[in-house]
Length: 468
Image (cartoon, rainbow, N blue to C red; front, side, top):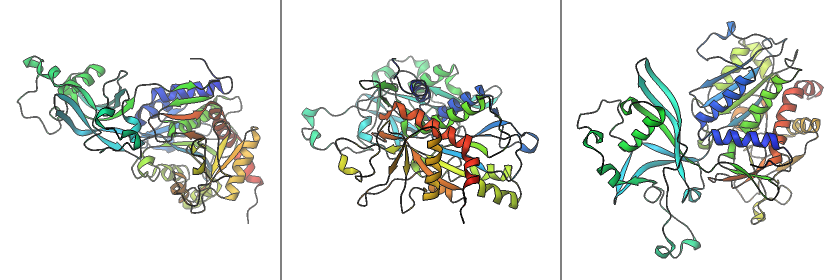
């Protein structure tokens, strides 16, 4: 793979991160692996942190394998210190295997799926799909959860031939329940199995899923994990496109790939924090606690134990500043960058943007503003972000939606309810929510530079800011 000339190393690391992370579970694992290599130590929410945390330390914890928070403590850290937080999300619209997925129709083995988030679902037709996720296993030493990623095509949702739907090019419409069911095999493959391989007539235990999914699918999962089929007691499996993310364009100026919304921002946050602690200047003597938060379930409203509306950030604030007085001080000194991707101007649909707010790929970080607070940015926060970008010689773009169009949102407004000053930022991409999205290679470094500048310089900049 030939690398682009500008921002090549950062962009290549993003591509590797995306290709290793077909699900939020895998993204959390990829992030944790990167942080541990940088010297971060895993702690657990169930532990007593008073004996665990030391000034100058670097730590991370996960919740339900699907959200991650990491933070560094300055040498002179004490309760009441502010937090400099980069908050992102790691989930993306996709298809998920139903708890009872076994379907058979007209000689085909099919897998029942449920749509997750607001995907551009027609982009999932005629793609080479596979499965990844986590599986609950029963072993000799108890129950455990293991991740799985099958690296070859298994499933496909074929379109109807144009001869049978002559109007398809005038408007492709389909029923998401009855006409959006992937094919995984042929019935003959099941019929030709030996008697020993066929389903047992024995009544299954309540925790068994052996009768809820095709035996061949369960056998494949068991083989992938090197376990007996009967050891599989539950799973959460996501469909994903096996075509990897890659560089593209005449000069490799683009990244084509899945899940750029929002693994792009999540990777940049992890990379910036890992790079910070690898620098000779770490640990800093004083200033804010630097923190990244990778949330799940943003695409469906963030309402879950691992979403942005959960207790994750409030719990961290309380544990670092346990008294009402120090907690209030900490919130007042804190600042949060809510980072999600933004809408790049589309050359074929330029009228969809307000004429003065048309971000471009590789044009630098976008500050997202909305008067109705669908984004949490305000003038003071935006000024701070611009000064931080200026420190690294970067470029700033602005985005506001047209008055005659609805505005999207992200984790920023809900996290601002805590009382933390918040600005929504991101880098511009095309094909948002498609199975394949498009970003700019240079923008990867632009995002990392902003987050690095934030971690390095926000506390000092904030001391210079006078707001009555």
